[in-house]
Amino acid sequence: MTPALTDRTALTRFRARARRAPALFLHEDVAGEIEERLKEVNRTFTAPAVVTPFPEVWRNILPGARIVADDETLALEPGAHDLVIHALALHWANDPVGQIIQSRRALQPDGLFIAALFGGQSLHELRAVLAQAESDLRGTLSPRVLPMGEIRDLGALLQRAGLALPVADSFSRRVLYRDLRHLVSDLRAMGESNALAQRQRAPIPRAVLARAEALYRDIFADAQGRLPATVETLFLTGWAPADTQQQPLRPGSATARLADALGAKETPLGPDIGASGD
Image (cartoon, rainbow, N blue to C red; front, side, top):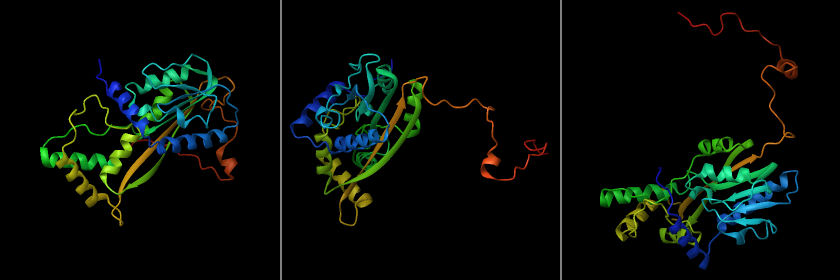
């Protein structure tokens, strides 16, 4: 049995703590981006569902949507929805493929699935300086920042889950902080504290934090001395299969030549093209 990546009990506790004084600007950014993407789809969605740990972000975006917690088993009924949004929670899933499959089963034919999650370039600065500081002072490395997936790997999950017309894309933004303490405070306030199952339970020693901040400033600080934190957001989009969707043509079934369409002269390949040389 594969060990769990995420300590779900700790993650729930960290999210509850975040709700006391939330800083959900990244969730709000993603909600706004998805709202714009939905406007570009020539469809009216009447039975949406949103998988999210922070329902308040979505109340004005999709006021009638079913809100679902990102539990290991999603509270979604098969075929009940024409839109399922998995909003900034999939990176904490112990079984991301299973989450997408459950979302796919909840879709009606030709229903739309959209997932937004943090990508592998997120917090690369913090990851690097914490690893270096701990190595310098303690001679060891501890899992301090969640490992996040790369777009080339996560895009393939859509096809594995049986979704049609899969698309994966991303964008990155930099958030600037005056010091490391404010960066860590924002992570806590959006429920993104370290909930790795194999994490060190003891707080990070002050000496390690001080060394990490010094490295952060030396390596990454901008001209004003601010510390940048990169946030990469991945978007995964796919549709539940339906007979009405566009289908790729069978290889060799084309009825027109590309050269004719381009108005170009076609030069046939010689018989020796592709043969191995001496």
